[in-house]
Length: 143
Image 1: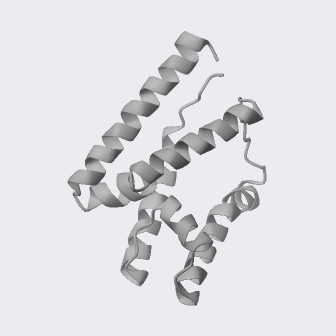
Image 2: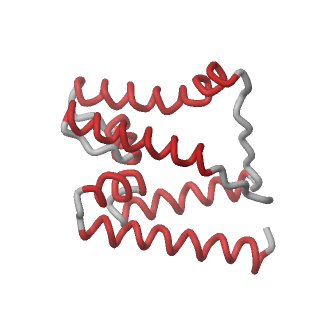
């Protein structure tokens, strides 16, 4: 599988993620970490806490539909692995975010912006693990 880098789309997407993070912090005083948001949906602390999380998750879900409405074409989504590997990956990510006390959106976007040493260390660990995994999958295993 070849990966095409699209710098303008990446820049625009990153800007929107940053803007959404800042707006969530300004309006509700909350960190925009995806796993924490999902956890709050599964184990809500209050009705108000649940509602903003549902709204944010629905916004994430609607992204491809908004893209199609704006561009006129559905985004191409390719998942070049088998279902068992996808499930295994999800389990490993779940374990990782549990031990890392958050995910890349919480640590990488919000934590680094707050100059949190823990978030900087977590993000460096995420990125190093990702680089090693991609190298092993593409060059050692050949997937």
